[in-house]
Amino acid sequence: MYRKGDYFDKFKGVGINKVRLIKDELGLNRKFWDRDVVEREVLEYIDYFMLGRKDINEWLDMEISKNISKKVKIKSYQGIRYSKGYPIYCQNVRNNGIIAKKLNNIK
Image 1 (cartoon, one colour):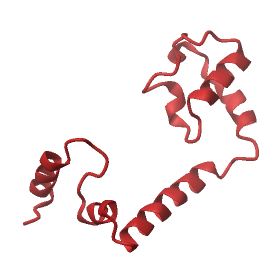
Image 2: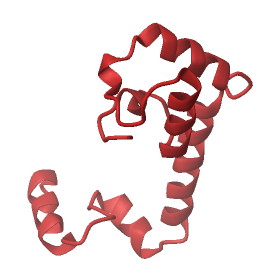
Image 3: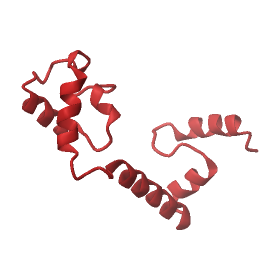
């Protein structure tokens, strides 16, 4: 089972389904804790899995920054919050915005 803070969180582009695929390929139980897995076996399989996808970290970072800059450029609600340094994705944006103002010394 995939858990937050798992060994596989170190790799971008490796989600829940990929973790299941890797565990099945290595013959591990899905409920098995990943910190008990020998890292060498996992790294060998991930190297094989990521073959041809070496630029995935840079590509994901570039896509994220491109989307953020697009939101800031068109001045959407989220883009304005990005530019002011406020939180974007949360339920309690009013209180978090007040705290962000205090932390960023914005008046």
